Image (cartoon, rainbow, N blue to C red; front, side, top):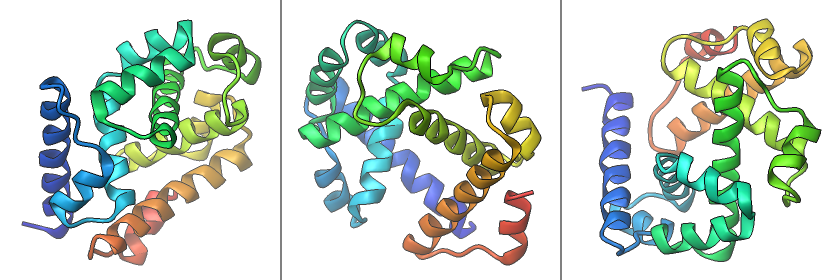
Length: 193
């Protein structure tokens, strides 16, 4: 089994643990998850965010009425601190941005403000996070976005899309290195094409 496959399997098992704990109303937050798997806090936060994303529709519905109500639900489900609640809510907003872009109806900053109200991060930053997240997932799935495709999907300039694709590739490389893996120059070049 390749290192990458082994990392993906650990992530999948950890995400299942988080979801099972949430379903049983015994939250497994990022700190406990990091300790359980002997990983760093950033990895654990990412796993919890992905688990929370699986509840995306519920979270987005809660966020549409009141972002603060959404964070209470997140705390109950995932045992997150206030700071982690904000990050989880951000993940729900990013999931909504990605879903809208997938349907060909990307948000602009004004649309986002109207839907979610005030958010600690600027709307354009949230939209960029959604685009980078999309680019990262597409590259992992072996179907990397071109700058033109990402720009069209989210309403970015080609320059901004190229920057976000590069950022996504570097984030993957950092995650692999932090987890004891590696990327070759050819893999990074393929991810940023």
